[in-house]
Length: 242
Image 1 (cartoon, helix red, strand yellow):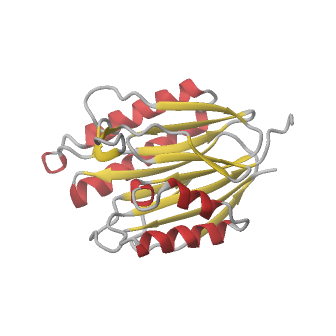
Image 2 (tube, one colour; image 1 turned 120 degrees about the vertical axis):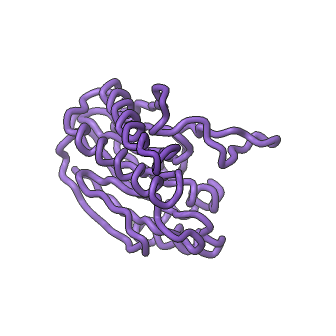
């Protein structure tokens, strides 16, 4: 029983700073030069992990992702249902918006994508174009919905349609899944934009999560790592009732 996590965040090869941030349990990270972190947690719930990809320039983007994840970390211990998750994301949106009223931070915002593990179910959530994938029997399936304008071929562009920090209430995407025991991949578009789903699927089929992580890191860097890139690989045990 329990939850195993492998996490990584990095500014990439082009950007001057890292505007991505990670939340795993109560741990947050916004490292400039990525290092692989592996953690194991007991079965205490709720357990929340998330990736946030900030925008609005060096200062604003860095801060937006941290403010959003700090809000989630504060609120998550009280989450018991998917409705609680949705309300928490609304509160995170409001906090980022309020900080962004500073004249030097106008326009800042952040995506968020994550999972909330409860006793008998897992709630996947996102706002923006950071992604949540489910991993079951070697099959990778996108659970999140990209809030992005599509190009002529129907592929999501980098122009997003909502983010935490906007004046209007956000409309979080939620997927409620039975807790049968499965894996999850959370990532910013610095990963999904550099690796097609087929390559990601090949990477996560590896038995050792450290090997899967190394494959993702190498592929993104070989592709140029033009953006900050962050991901969290999570293995969640089945519910005790099973």
